[in-house]
Length: 81
Length: 200
Image (cartoon, rainbow over all chains, first blue to last red; front, side, top):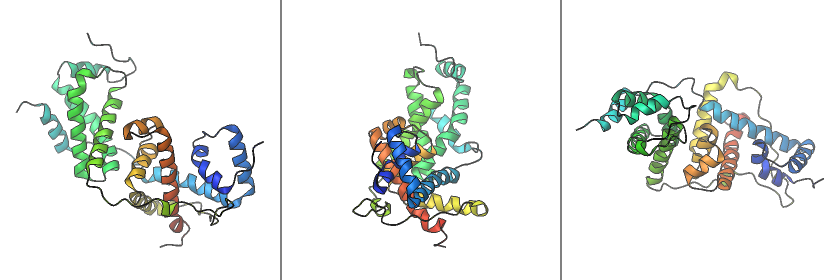
C-alpha cells in the first residue's frame, strides 16, 4: 500500500481525483488521507461545489434566437456586392 | 466526387444543399448555429461586439472552408471549433492587459506538507440566493488571469475534452489539466469568504 499523501499532495492530485483519473493505488491513498483529515474533506467538498457553482452560474435555460442584425450581416457576406 | 458525410450527422442533407450553393441552406445554417457560437464567443470574450465579430469571422472562414470540409466531424462541431478559434484569436490580439497572478489565490502549505490554513465548511444550500450566487461566481471567474479563465470556460462551461481544449489553445493536455485545477482552486479561494458568510 502506498504511503499516506500529505495535504499538499492531496491538493495537487485533486483535479485528477475529481475527474476520476487517479490511478487506483493513488486514489486509495487519497481516500485514506481524507478519512483522517477533516480539513481536506472540507476542501475537497468545497472544490466540488465550486465546479458545480461554475456550471450553475452559466446554466442558461434556453438559448435565445440569434440577433436578426447579426444573421443579416453574416448572410450579406455571401451576397454579391 | 465528394465523400459521403457520416450517416449520423443530422446535417447531412443540409451539407449537400450548402455544397450546391443553396442560399436557403446557408440561412438555415446561420440561424441554427449562431446561438451556440455566440454563447461561446461571449463567454470567452466578455464583449458583445467582439463576440458578434468573432461569430462573423467564423462564418467567413466556414463559408470559405466548406469545399474542403470532408465530413470527418459533424458540421455543427466543425463550425463550433472554427468559432472557438476565432474568439481565441481575438482574445490573443487584444492589447496585453496586466495579467494578475493566480498564485495569491492558491492554497499554502507548511514545510511538513500540511495545509497552512484549515478549510472551513460551506453552508449546504444557497437556494434563496441563487441569483446572487450566480453573479458572485461570474464576477470571481472574471478576476482570473486570461490564461486560466479560458481553460476554465472551455473545460467546465463548454465541456470540451482536455485534448480538444489543448488543441484550441495550442498548449499540451498536461498544461490544460494544470491550469484548470489551479483556476478552480483560485475560484474556490475567491468564493470562500462569501460562501462562509464572512464577506457581505
